[in-house]
Length: 223
Image 1 (cartoon, rainbow, N blue to C red):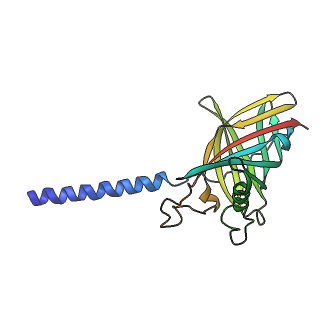
Image 2: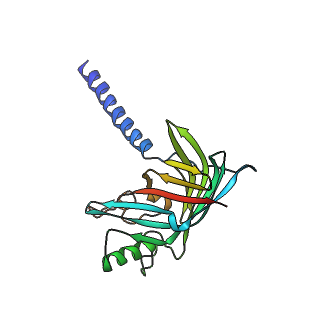
Image 3: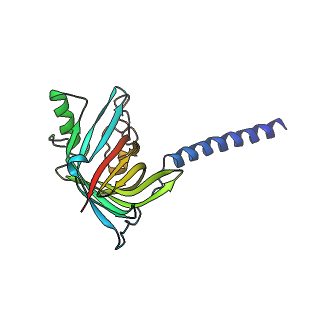
């Protein structure tokens, strides 16, 4: 009887460990699939993104600190019908990556590393010589628990993944504004792998978090 109890206990422990492992794997799996791009109706009006007043704020962290900065938007259009965004897209100028928390040579060195303009380190981050732009294509806007949830396909370094974020959208006649709340993307989904402990072993405390915080701010004018 004692031997039987021990066998049952061991089986239970193995099952618990396996269940925990499976749970962790499921938690870390991005199940969002690329969706079909939204199409505007004939009744929609186009709002052209004001590139001088539109940008993306980014933030990254590591055990020894963090950095944040901006990337500019080079073009974009949002199609609006009855104060509802039906479709849209914008192009991100990856050559405009800027750091805002450093100065002098440290600032320049970080920006060059992120852009991939340092010889031998082109592929560490965004490799803007090969991939000068990124794109976002809207797949839908939905009301979820009192918030506007914007969905779309984000393409960086020729890799496309679906993203979703809450945003405030205001349309006032010929002007409109879209401002997202900060949201997180896993940079490794777009092959931005430098310093990732989920990709490389034995990094110790020299790793950089896979999570990047993104905030989008767009203004646009009716064409």
